[in-house]
Image: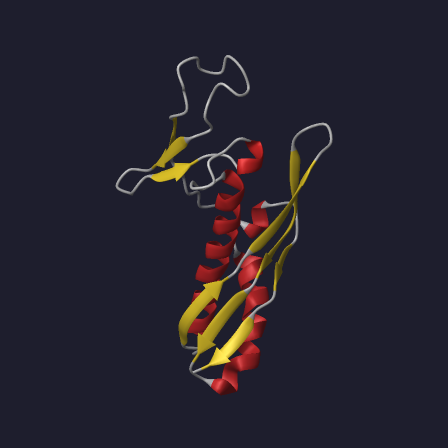
Amino acid sequence: MKEHHYKLKITWTGNLGTGTSKYDAYSRDHIISAKGKEDLLGSSDPAFRGDASKYNPEEMLLSALSTCHMLWYFHFCADNGIIVTDYVDDAEGIMEEAKTGGGKFREVILKPTITITNSDKAELAIKLHEEANKKCFIANSVNFPVLHLPVIVIA
């Protein structure tokens, strides 16, 4: 089996002077870095005392699922002669918080609108989402359903 290794550096930037002395005494802000790439500014969801202007872990998970799916989908479209000229996914995720703390995602729904040039392949363009879901590394790594509601536009 071939392995791929990934490295990120996560740097907490939220020490407001007293560290984590109290739950409300620190910021959840952090920087996500990788060699040769722009930094991403992260925080927690505002519901958990985070900064709404920064990406939170839940959004990053949703982004990983959506982009992994999109890239596999492009691969299968190229293999099948489907020319995609535009792709926008309005992805949504539902996370449930447990009464005792913590929680988990219940589901993610990918809602891509895909513009293709060949009307005769619209049905296949829809079907290829199933194949992309089967191959997506991230979708294969989560324990909740990743659903798809694709819309095909011919232009």
